[in-house]
Image 1 (cartoon, helix red, strand yellow):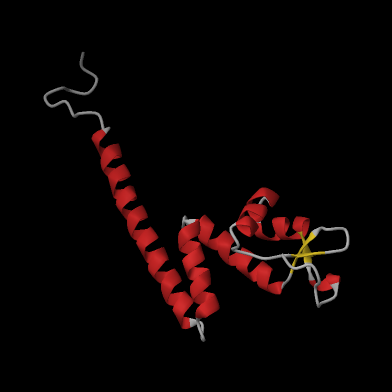
Image 2 (cartoon, helix red, strand yellow):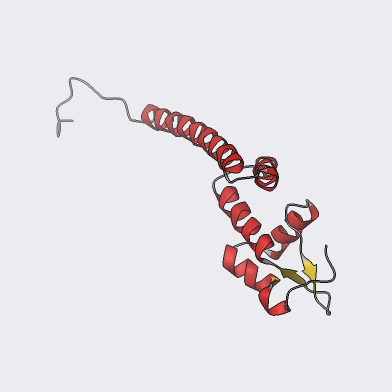
Length: 132
């Protein structure tokens, strides 16, 4: 955590603002901070403030979590983003993770479809409708 921001506090978002903006809980954001996925600055009242970099990372984290990626996968994507000289490395990494997630979900969907099909009532042959 940084304690001496260089930008005016007006350029930083508060915890309430980023929670609302990204649909995250304060607890989740504090967890991401403890895992060092994001970093924050503190104002004079010791409240967390989120600069543009932290907000960008929170948006990526929120999007990837909603897509079902693990925090380890997200860390790898963010690390690639930080290390890359261009945008390509983290995009390739993210696409690979998301395509794998899609493959797993497609496989699960097929399994659900098969299970639902097995629940269809057996057909009775030789019975007439309305006859008892």
